Length: 567
Image (tube, rainbow, N blue to C red; front, side, top):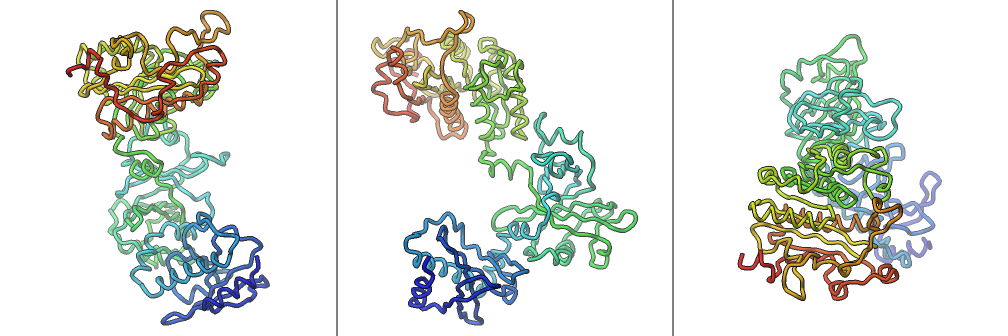
């Protein structure tokens, strides 16, 4: 870059800017006069403009604690957060404009911090956790805390020394008031295998003090904080050599969690120090806390906590059903019962979500264990049952939704007849895919709404119920299954991508219904490429030819359906 040109341009715009050097490194320096003081920024010269230019604040200690400013004490400089500099699309062909824009942002932020003290304090609290992280040292002190935000005694377990990744590599703290974890969840299993690492307490704060700027100030900050808390007697009188104090407080950016690892270096055990005079022989270490509770983790991970009370029955745990249950779990569904009599085999391995460790295991059982391990608060059950073995009204009506992914239209229609005749009130999603990546479908049948599974079986030419779905993209009566090893080894050719896409449309229907954004019986299809089908000599349906609503949710109701007409 031509820095001379940049400096000249900024001078023309009225900035007090010049070339300089800092500890032998070439830089440009900008001086700005405010109402009560003057400040200096520097920018280290670089060869290429790849993001919004960064300016550092010189002598930051002169100005007290400023929000969005991170000090580097060894250099007497501070970086300034003006947003994600990499996220800004920069005109690298005209760097003059980028430098002026960046400089204006830096000046504006520092000016607001210096002249508006209330705003500065509010912002310091908003970014409390970021500032806290800046004073935390070794990540080996990090703690995963399974707890709600109330006062609570906590069991703390040591990391497994041989592990570098995952839950085993970090301290884990669990309080009695933590939400009940899934049976096979990793943290639940850790309780039995870990070595104790000291005593912990969760301490909510009503009044939060901005984070200290350096770890050297941590003891003063701690005493100022703890002296404003009325501690329960079980915390005040507890004696240990190692305490883990996990704080939480409301900030403008939400509930913030952070912690201190307190280690007594003297003889015997001591109570928690609550006065400066009691801090002798105590080492106070700021630590990162990764909170492990529903209210924090589910929304932060993309799940909807309002779905936690919903219960779904999933029948069919093959490649489509396996994808569906994982996507329902990821959405936040709190309870699932999985049904499938089949065993997971090598033939499934490339298009199924299960790992090879489950080979030879019942698919429903394997997925139940997998879900428990992945989603901490889910509740799962499994059955080795076929769809037609589930025709029990009381059983079916305990669920908010039934999802059927078995790819057997006859069984699905028989089951639908049972639902109609016995007035089962639970909505049902049926989903299936077609071979060679040509497409997949899902229907949502809500008993209180017009539109049912049989609407998808009305022969569009004759206007009466038929035996094949009118959603299909392949013409009827074509044998597209592949035979590699005799009649017992027939299979439908499709890929993991087709499974995932079909699962996505079915899950979309499920979540939209459970969130009440879809209130009528609906259908949805995805349409794939037909070139392989035609090369092999198969025929596509008229619907495939004219279909232009791929991935769109449309009403299921067909006025020629004798079951729904007049409903």
